[in-house]
Length: 502
Image (cartoon, rainbow, N blue to C red):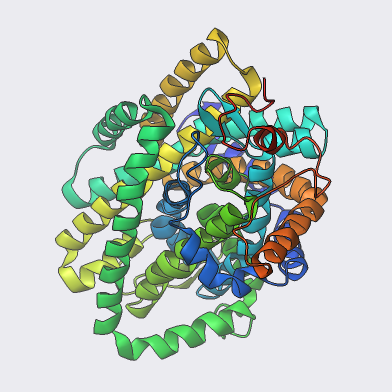
């Protein structure tokens, strides 16, 4: 254990995580998501079909940027990671079965949050050296005209995505392979770092190409496997659903006393997994080429559903159907429920044991290890892109940016190896600190900027009713500082080399 004087890093990370993820942040996440859903008239439900249709739509007149599907796949790769396999296990382990219902609630409402932040990212995106860049720093500076807060978010994002979050993913991979094939964690970390280095050196284009193949394929394969486990244990599903509902409202005879933890862990792990409100999703959304910001807002909202309502649910119901979990009161350490599988604290072993009931322990561990490796690897790729965008924002163009990007690449590879050497709970605490820092700033920013997103949605739906393929005009909507769209209006063929039309 690494210590600073008499205080351990594990203790420091735990205290800081509890401060960042105070009840105030949980309430802010839930209330803001509800507000966005009401103001958009639950766009995440009304336009569900449109979300799926727009996945494969792109604006071919824009020479810069990536396609909507590539942006969706990159966002999905960031969302579908250890949170879907390990995070779900920790939510159940410390919040009980009811935590999953709160994950569903934050995903359903969070799709509205994701729509707003992704739409804002498109409104205020910039063309930077042949790539679109956008996200919270850009819309905070241009929309709120608050440069200092934009810089603070960029720094928080750089620290979180470049240093604090990658160890969570590599830790999950290392534990899974150590359990399945007894590979020492440090060797796993080195291999992951080497492969990651080969991908991120190729920049956003290579990351997008890898993500659009790996992320959807692995998500589908994993869900199919979970469905097979559930089919084999279909008689347990009604009681599982009942436990989840009773636990979520605090009436469960065993888990009713931890209702506070149930809500907190459900919301925390839900946001960690689906990233709605966290501020990382809009960074990818800003990279897409679309004719109207709402199009990418709808696509990004859809990725929240895929992540939480599909992949996370598959993991959760599978674990609870075969009862491969324990429930521990995080405050007192009291064990409220223990399974017959001799499992310890919540980690990837809960999911491995569940699949092991179908495939056997050895093969179950191996399958989860491979699935987790793909999920976590693509998530680390997304983290790198988020951190790189923050560097682009902070340092602009030129040699300085190039040097700092290479420093980031080295740091994130070191962080990946470092994560394999730490205990799982420490890695998750550190990751939670990173997510919480970004969420505080981003949610407050999009609450203040949301009228512009709502105005943009009304414009989109008005053009649709007129039989048009919606095209965005920031000047008509009285949205200043949308420099890319102003330049595009001057040159409708999309040939402007920079965001300011120079």
